Length: 221
Image 1 (cartoon, one colour):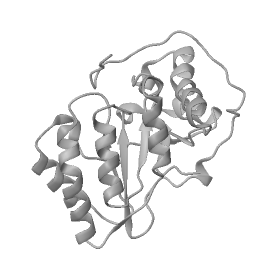
Image 2 (cartoon, rainbow, N blue to C red):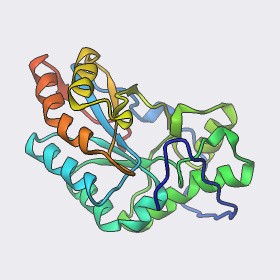
Image 3 (cartoon, rainbow, N blue to C red):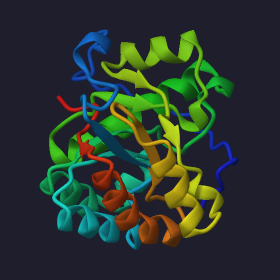
Image 4 (cartoon, rainbow, N blue to C red):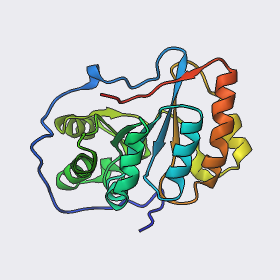
């Protein structure tokens, strides 16, 4: 099922899972890249077409990234979730259906926050340590619910705007122009039409290396 960037999906059922105890982990989780590096992050996957291509590029360059997965996609493609972990990348939560979390009632919000972690845990035996809220939309209540579910809320980072499909050259130049120590780049492997992201990624990696920067992960336990 294909969701557009501005579609808000709502789920009305509530699940509970005892391993997700309430804790504020903000002080234990790195949310920016290490000094002298940038962090590559990918939202909305996994996707059976684009995620494997991105994994192959990252493996070629020996780079570890962070993937923020949508729960319904992780459930559809568990083998890809396993491959992301096997390749050494961090797997985190990006809500269940990619709604704007600030627009949900309490039951819907709890489901959107909790269910991806349940799904991911069942697939790989590890729970996400972070949740990146869709559209960069949060408020204190949303962040509190994320923390109550044992995760650190994280913002989107620097937006590559790759989902707008402006062309490979524009994606590359925009990212490289804004590459500096500590930067976290937001790109996308999930939902549809990510060909430009895949094509831009090798040029982005090579350009960042030419600037003397390395690569690190965020939201790793």
